[in-house]
Length: 193
Image (tube, rainbow, N blue to C red; front, side, top):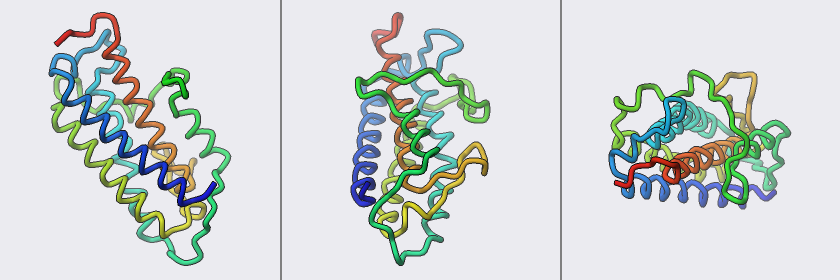
């Protein structure tokens, strides 16, 4: 895959995520943002806080890796890694807009506080800010080799993504949880206002 094209696609996806975050935050009332169909399901605001939890690791990690990467001999083609490609594809919503199989979240990625303790405005503002930083990183990544720069996974050094796969994994992960949040608005019992 052409590295430049990959970065354009990831920038497009990141912009769509920002637009969806703004839509969710402005379209939904406080009751709707905090509503949960049961104790084992996240609210809309918890879905967004989960994205923030991941971004708190990946944004600084990608920033460090891009800043320290050489900017000469940049490969024009990106070859996805076997594991990175698998994880990005596994995380991505299906083409029909459905979430692929349910996954259990590791404890350290659960939303940090109870729903009632989360300030929706702050949670959404933080997430939008993360995605603006992600867009800046995508722009800066045009000057580094997406194949050679490696980013340590949030679960530890056992998994290291190629930078291109890291972008793909993150946008897929964020799309997945925004779809989860949007699906809550269609659930039985969701507040009308």
